Image (cartoon, rainbow, N blue to C red; front, side, top):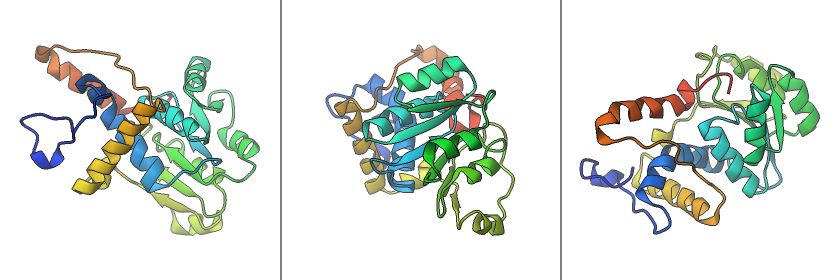
Length: 229
C-alpha cells in the first residue's frame, strides 16, 4: 500500500512525516490486520479481556502492544517460556504455554466467563476449543490456518455453546473501498505516532534478493505462521 509507481493510484496512501517508507513497509500488512480485527471486525473496548492465539507471532506482538495501550487485557497463547516472555514484554497481560497448560481451563479462570472475543490464527488445532472459551454471544475470529484448515463448525454447536458467533475475515475485504483503506492506514499511523504500536524492522534486503524478501513476508502471514508460536 505504500507509494510506488507500479501500484494503482486508488491503492496508494500518503505516509505522515513520522512514518518512513521503511517503517511503513515493516508495519502496514501486520498493523492493518490488527486494526481491522480489533476496530472493525470486532470493536474491542477498554476494560475488555480478549484471547489471542500465537501472541508471540508477528501479528500477535503488534496486537498485544496496541490492545494493552488501549486498556485491554490480553491473554495470549504461546508454545515456549521464551515466547511467553516476549509476549509479556509487548503488553500481553497473561501468557499460556500450551505445551504445559490447558488453555481453555486457564482462560476460564482468568476471564471469569466474560471473554467476548477470541482471535485465532492457528486454525485446526485450536478453533474447536476456542469456542469453549467464549462468553455467551461471544465471537470467534478465525483468521489463519497455521495448524491446518479448521474443521467446519456446526451451527447447532454455536447455539448449544451460548448463541456464539464465528467469522472468517480477511484484510482485502476490509480495505476494499478507498474510504476503508484510508481509515485503516490512518488509524495505524496514529497508533504508531502515539507509541502504541512499535514495529520492528528486523531485516533489510537488496533489490536483487526480492525473492527472499517475499518468502520472509509469507512466513509472517497468519495462514503461514508457525502453529506453535
